[in-house]
Length: 427
Ligand SMILES: Cc1cc2nc3c(=O)[nH]c(=O)nc-3n(C[C@H](O)[C@H](O)[C@H](O)COP(=O)(O)OP(=O)(O)OC[C@H]3O[C@@H](n4cnc5c(N)ncnc54)[C@H](O)[C@@H]3O)c2cc1C
Image 1 (cartoon, rainbow, N blue to C red):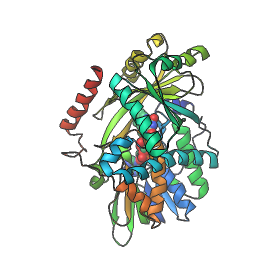
Image 2: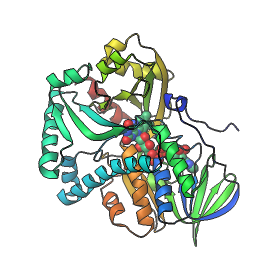
Image 3: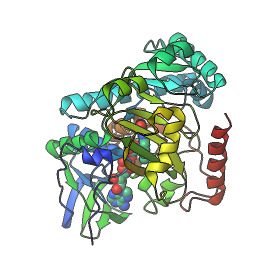
Image 4: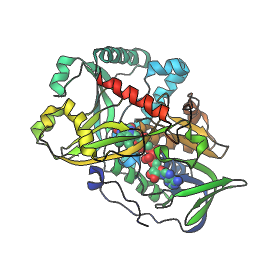
């Protein structure tokens, strides 16, 4: 059988190197077995090694093969849900702890990059653009709220006149500039984490899909080629969980999201689109997000689908969203188009939890996983070592189940998602 390789993206075309990790053969034992070699699994492995645990990572494909190697590369501060919303959801005290964890998530990403010298084009700054006047007003209020209640001074509201100097993007009514947010090359970051985990002593196996596991006196995890006996298990499969763990699947819905990369742009055109080399995104339900690559390509994400099927022509599927914002790119060549699956939750907050005293999971980052999945690894390592407090701050956020379950991407859910995405068009 042909072994899966990285999807044909600009990221795969510009990867630093792709180290190979052996397929699991035979039997092995470990303190902790981790299923999934994306940011969640790899960060867990690094943080567990720091605490002295032996670790095995089992990845069905290649490390970084999933969303971690295909995403927009935006590393936003805070949580996916806004603070005002979180205060209503969990009360002011827990909302404050979540805010702190959201800041720590970005610091954890930067700390790992620095500590392991990961070459992944890390840059600072994000502009979140208001797609309607109402969104602009509420963004300005949110900035004020973060300043007055959280003493956060890394954000400011950018009025439309100033915004026009910062981007030629059409249809925006204002923006929030956050100077603490970052952006990076996601696949190089993922592979850098894998190399760091490997160097720290974790045993990584690629092309080693977990078929099932059982839990009795210990946990036995089976792949086609071997078995791992472990004291603890971490399920870190996010949008690719499928039927492996139905007990954790009902709170997440896998959706597909798409990106393109243009040909390299002239310096003048690149600066016209994004003056300060920040990442950018809009405020639509089906979010558009973009930034420049190290070689001045526009990397643009837009469009979602809710069934397993990818569109036949991804480049053109995403291009139409890009042209609404930057019509001047009509003649620009699109060189890559790709998609990936991420997991969303009902309230857009991630779902952290335990399936027993020895089996843990974290997923459903809802498009905010570069920082929060990295943080999840740190908190999963803490909870396994018996330090439950910070993991539980995340786990205690209510995580409603999708009605009817999500494994079959229930038609009602698909209809609801389509309804919200259609609403975007009339704003
Ligand atoms: C197109 C796109 C754009 C995005 N943009 C952004 C962005 O700009 N900023 C942001 O913060 N987030 C973004 N996200 C979300 C972010 O990429 C994810 O939240 C994050 O990568 C999740 O990491 P993970 O390790 O949990 O999951 P993944 O990276 O998906 O890793 C899960 C891994 O589990 C493996 N696996 C599954 N089943 C098994 C099994 N049975 N046995 C062994 N291995 C298994 C898979 O092969 C996969 O490699 C985006 C996602 C997509 C798809």
